[in-house]
Image (cartoon, rainbow, N blue to C red):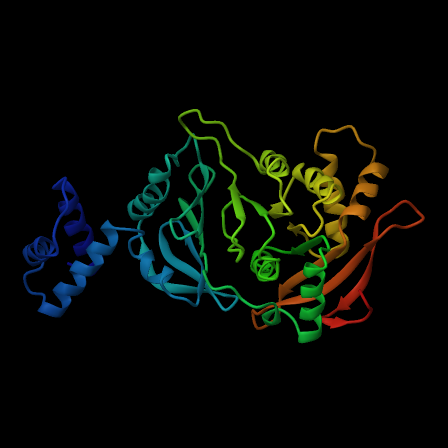
Length: 364
């Protein structure tokens, strides 16, 4: 019997007990199924079965690796990870029943379901890591499981930029400029946002709004809000936009929105324009100009009958700086550009570069 078959047999028999099974009892099961194993091999089998039965099973070892930022399960087969900005395959191999068990362990404690009726689920592990689940029939070769690890370590701004650029960004935060960090998927937007937030005045009341609570702000007066998807038992969704409106009623000195993706962009712009200077957010875009156009488009989807000119007036008076972050060829995240937002006579909002390719080109 090979190791995978042994693990499955012992695991299934232990689950059939319907109660917690000790390591000694697992050892007895291993010995019954594979009596010729030596002590070291039997102990290894017990550890593997314990990993399958608790936590995220065989993924726990990958999640304990500080170099791993993402764990990618593409259905049955080998598990992939991202290390240092590069995706690589591991020697961990899962079958479909095991993937389904992992999905159930993630969603069940949260009162969620992942099945044909609810094929797409977003969740958060107890350590703050984000999990996305995609189930068949949407996931053709699924189930798929994507884990974005939460890192408790806060990086300094100088890890993203040269000293002069880092000083520019820190000064902008302390001067209560409104900043939006932009970049692609995995570019480091949230990590840079967290680094910038370490320079907020610790006496300020800061309200954070996120899909998954990842930010770790140092102040003693931080109020965190997290959105909620609709639940199978009828609880309605609480979207980011509703939380931004709630934040405005909580007497914030600053509002930090983890990411704007829709109509909440208009609420965020209005907050920046109504006494909440120094607010920060992120936006998914490939560059600063593209971010401006995305912010315009998202604000127009807010369901408020505003002309484009009015939205652009809000945008130019609200956002002071756009900070683009991206991956270098070696996988490191770097600040690529910092642009100041200005009005333009042709009724379009445009940007004036302050930093290009990580080097200052103009005064803020």
